[in-house]
Amino acid sequence: MSQQHPQNQQPYQGGPAAYPGGPVPPQQPQPKKSWFARHKVLTALGGVFAFFMVLAIAASGDDADKGSTTAATAPQKQTAAEPVEAADDKPAEEKQELSQADQFKAFIAKNGTAAEKDAAQHVTKVQGADGSNGILDAADVYTDFTGGMMGPHQGEGKLLASAFADWKDSKNGLVTIYDEGGEILSNGNF
Image (cartoon, rainbow, N blue to C red):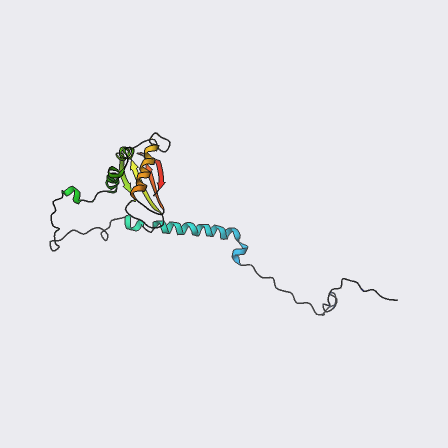
């Protein structure tokens, strides 16, 4: 009589499992996943939070220079020991530095089209055109127009945004044109 052996044999593992005291095959420890792998949602939320914190810090980096004029940053008065500047033939108005709005209007008066010159007469204030922080350069132009983005002066807002882009140049600048009530008329890159 010949005995047939089963085709699917398992290798010898030290004896039957029910045999008390018999050798037991070693268990391979399961590799423990990292905290980040186990908590995917919290990791994603933390990454988004960190991203916005970096943006906020980067955007506020230049605000310290512009914001306040305290005694430490205020210009000091000229004393008698310091030399007085030589008198020029220029009128006193030209000696004073022009505001950003006046500089912008002067640029448009010199280089702008007739429509841009008409729109520039409504500019009341310009902020943020004097500096560049290299991350996001943002400038605001305030006008005495009314109606907001859907109002009748949207075209003039676009003309002013275009003229601002001709006046100032930045790789990542954004100019926003506001109406009299603080509503956005237009915006554009510069």
